[in-house]
Length: 179
Image (cartoon, rainbow, N blue to C red; front, side):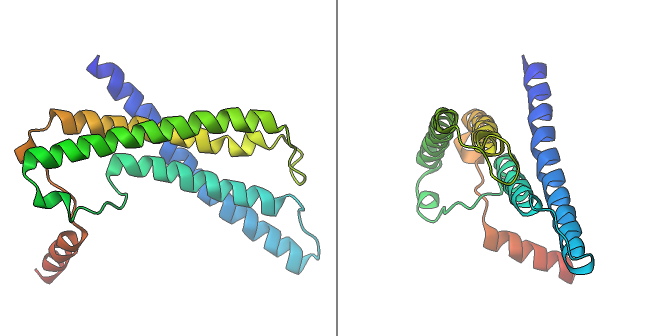
């Protein structure tokens, strides 16, 4: 079973990273081409601005989903780090479980809502639900990543849980540069 989850982890990570990177690169290239066409050749692609927006949104949301794996999201630990390790672990488990429920519920509701609208994007001439499908997909992938963290947290002894502290990381970085 562990090999199955490693394969799923690799697939989800590849999807997140690939869409985040290519979305950003293609968005920048498309915006650049459209600016050059507009100011040098006095013409532009009418759909380029809309597609650039969607590419950046896709990139940001898939990057955010990947951020759950890396633990890159902001968390305020001032209160829970004052508790005993076992109470802190309980709060972290609860917070991760709540995050999974939220991401799955919102993702599911968005799919239903997007399918009901039936609107067409004016510039791209595609159903609006296609570019907006990124939201539920990214939320489902983020929920998977949070579930991974939840399992990892559950398996970790309460005494061994280390919270990420940005100020401590900055101090360590400065110490490393001074050596």
